[in-house]
Length: 363
Image 1: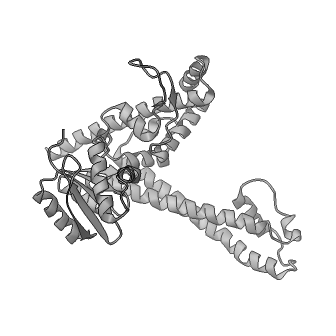
Image 2: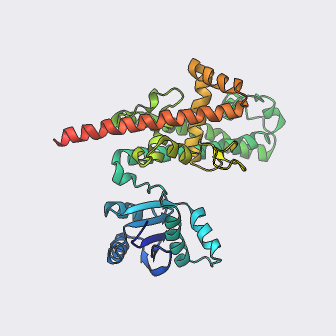
Image 3: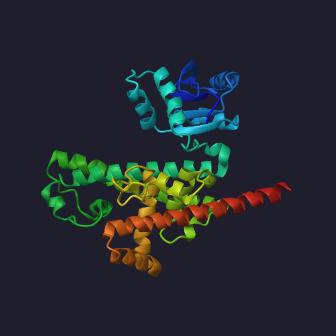
């Protein structure tokens, strides 16, 4: 049972608010600090004055990232509190929404659920993984922007004059239709709107090629960084460089998951009990987990599809589940749960090897 006070932090762009409660959830004190190095130092002094060790941070991956890094560096036990958890605490007490109330609600959420995972302070955990995250986010931004531009270009291609549109293919990828414009004589366009659309659609072809080159360069850089990291995740069928980088950056320190079941619950691959009347027995019915980390869930789903297509063991496993009376979707979920175990075991093994190498270098 907790005997020392617990703090909660509600961060924003310019400031963050700290609220401290006792082990019973009773408010002790609160204060607001600038979201800067000076504010981090003052907040840590306040927490030390009240003998706080456990701190909950809402939004530690966005505006709360720097204060979370400062807390971990100062050896506080900093936990990530999802906004839904603090909102539940606020609604349960019928409180208004203010920074102070949110800070206290975040602290109470940690009291109510001490098993919340630690914050993702990748700079403290491993600077190399933090760099992988930066490259991965850059690639993700470029892909999303390129996808948005191509969808808009597709809409504009459909509005080109008939004499141009009829020479374009109606199937295939959008970039293929866009590049087809280079091979068409566009001087016969008779409408002013058609001339204007072509005036920016044709230069867009070279811009799209440049964007694709940049994405490929970032993927090569990710491959190099993963080699430097020494991860074995790419040895798992269906997990390529992007999926491996996503796993490394989303998971962070794999030892924060004490068991496979905790990782499965965090990734949304563990079945959720939905049963009644079982008494002391095991639940007789389960349902899909709609929570969890959706990026990791997506990585495991794609890996499951690839293995079902290419790996005999995966096909045998899924076919066996179907023969036991499960639907194809239930069999797929069971295989994802199996994959989650394999992935976290790989990550535990890799991290153990990396720690041993660090100790050898230090010795």
